[in-house]
Image (tube, rainbow, N blue to C red; front, side, top):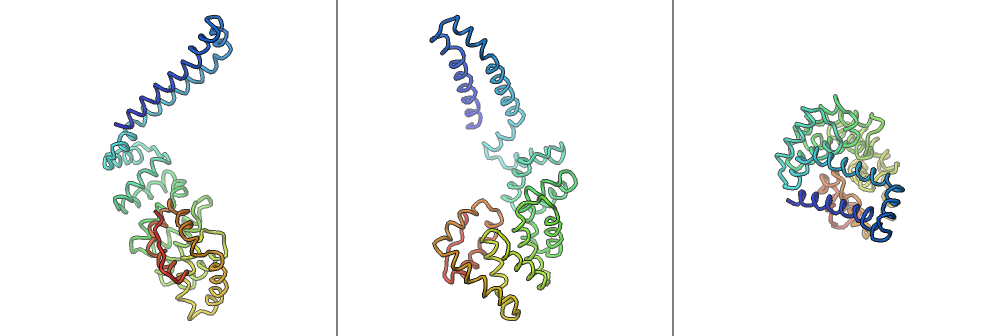
Length: 275
């Protein structure tokens, strides 16, 4: 087992290195008296090291099952462990949430994501701030536009929520699904004027484009922003833009729509993979 081997080797290397530097090396260079003098002057180093190695091993012992499941790629056991820790034991640790949300997404368990959302809202609301895009997944994939609009609106009302630009685009998308075109238009136009990822601006332009033929305001804004963005963002920059968003969950989910938007924007067929 790789994890167990790494753990043992790490302990051996750290302890042997410390013994050599603190005891063997001073003894070889200065003799027994010199060793005693060296230890007397640097006793605090030994104390710090002992505290570190004990704390490290206690931490690893407490999380041994977690790292063992990750090492063996036993995803069901990992899910069971994390659900027990969060739902039953109330251990609302950030990395527990991230691992469990990733497990749910890999298994396409959208109901489980919503169940975790309900728990987080009651027990640890700040988790909604940290993992806002993860909790958005069910609302983007399930055909529940009214609930989606409400959820995105509530997230945006939170002062410390992350990924605010993507959340606002999600809100605009849900408004379009609810046939609230004017409100969606206002959100999308607003996104064009703020400092956000180019992908957010690109998707906003793409969803505004069908409105341009019947809405003079939208046509005026597109006539203003499209030439500007096409001058700033040339085709050769596209791979770099995608690479910068490779860890963005929503960009991965919307890869097909992003590809279509890029084809429209660059007026040529381009790749969309953010992997």
